[in-house]
Amino acid sequence: MEKENVAVVITPKEMYELVQEVTRSLQRIEARLDVLETRIQSANNADERSRQAINLAEDAQQRANYAYEKAKEVETRQLWLWGIIISEVIVGAIGALFYFAQKGIGG
Image 1 (cartoon, rainbow, N blue to C red):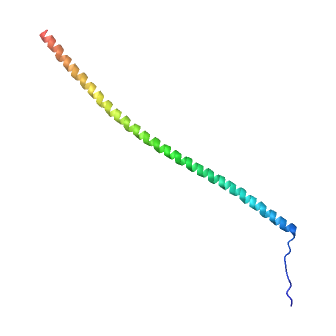
Image 2 (image 1 turned 180 degrees about the vertical axis):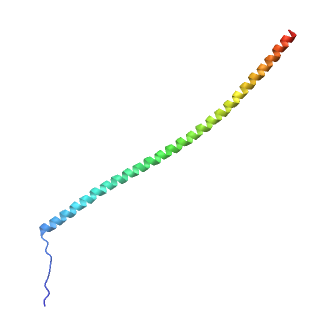
């Protein structure tokens, strides 16, 4: 028995159609890659903006804490000031009483 040569014959038209199909597939893949690259870039931009926002928030928190501490300091000093003023008024009133008492007695 003789072996027969079995071959597949692809016509130029079929080759052209296959090449065109591969070209269309590559174009779809490129389009999808472009979309993915755009999304990755957007994600990177969003990540950078979020890092900046976190840094700003941390800075604002530090400033708020500093302002709070200063306000507490001012409040403490204000309480001392009121205490001193009230003490001075009391001492002045007592001094005035003694003054008027002496004037009234000796006058």
